[in-house]
Length: 351
Image (cartoon, rainbow, N blue to C red; front, top):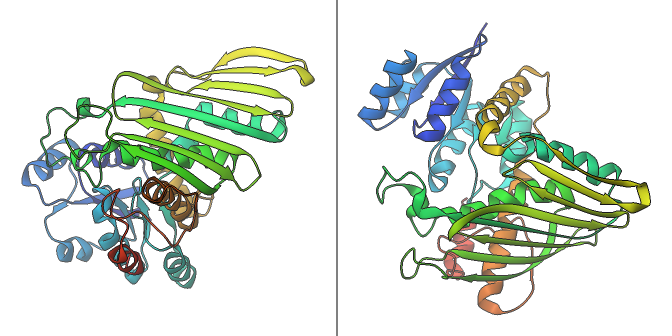
């Protein structure tokens, strides 16, 4: 029997999920999308049923959801999945659902909750994980820099594109996105000192620069800088351990190992990200289906997602207080990066 998956949203990521799910012989897919143009596009391209209301979509009888909507809208669909006992996959988070509620509901109904963790499926990250685990030795510190031009993202879309909104802007989202991979490689952050500012030309009162210095659970130090208004694209890191150093470039796929205590000095390539990304997306959504079938285990959960987004919140709060702030998975990002008041606590209480 085929697994019936309801795809929520048919933007750029939603269309990728439809493409990859319809390529499987063990999945049947339908779409919930409010835009008539997007429904027509998906129907014409993939020949799938399309719905414009949640009531009619749920009547189709899905056992799983794939949620590909803007980050601020995830919670409403997660609630439906938890209430109805549906497996669900959710794209990159900024405001993740409280992890204890997800854990309790999925345990009670034996369902899969799969927050996106795209980087964990990238070949370079898989090899880095092995190197860190087997060769680097005890971690002293890592530093990672991402430099991007947010204004160039999806130029055919206007201000409705979520990454152009201050709350969900692409620079802010990429802080959490990069931390997923970095925390998996090097250890989760324990506390954070943060700087958040406007350094480019994306507009007034629009943050485009985040800098985090973190003390990690394993005793090491982590540093992350994300710049969203840079003409030069770069995505590079270096880690120092007791056996030497590793340098890595996510865009080119190069890993340089300088581990003199192990007699290792080399550079290897694991594929340019631009050439691999579509296959990475396919492997990610395939892993969700295989986890539902019981043949694979999802590598990332809502507790980890809450920790990652809690680190973002701690950095933003630190930028206001000037203090080191503890990472708390129950203290999640405010609607805006400078909005850490009493209403932030109330927001976190209902996800």
